[in-house]
Length: 216
Image (tube, rainbow, N blue to C red; front, side, top):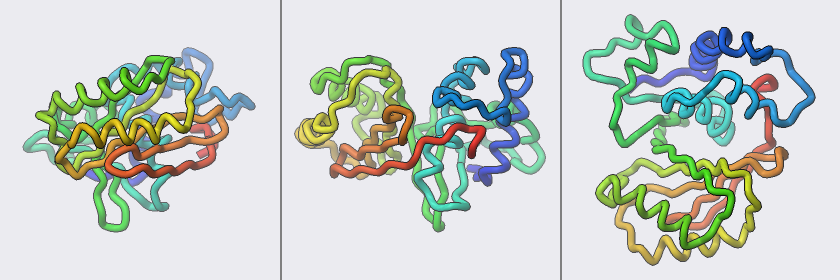
């Protein structure tokens, strides 16, 4: 595993995407008075690659929920020397171990939180449909996530009823999952704040002000 400072990953990420962005008239630095900038950047840069999406979410989203100085970590393939083999975004993507349960981790205060990222694209958040989606994803890993947290990114853009998370917590507890990892729901709340709900094993809530990549 390699753990990178925020500025290290940001430099790799920006350098790798600047050319794509410039062709669309965007950069990470030309701040516009537009609260949809983060989403436009992702769309303009054609961030569809799984690893790039994970880096984007970790770097410009999840890291804000952790103390300053926290690092972003990735599980690497065997025989990779980070100091010699990783000089660019392309190098990093090639070095990341595929099919590993952990997509990325956050190292903070000498503790490591590991995450498996999934996207939920449906606009309607129906409890039964959403809980079955989660159950299916977990079953893919033998119903055991170990210590890797399941982070679900809501990208459908539909209305979110906060009471839904309480009901979802009750539904998930009824499945009697045996792992100790957390199930987390991450979303943008009206471009004012970024929100994480822990819906398993307990029900918890955290939010931070929404900031564009150009303002971070």
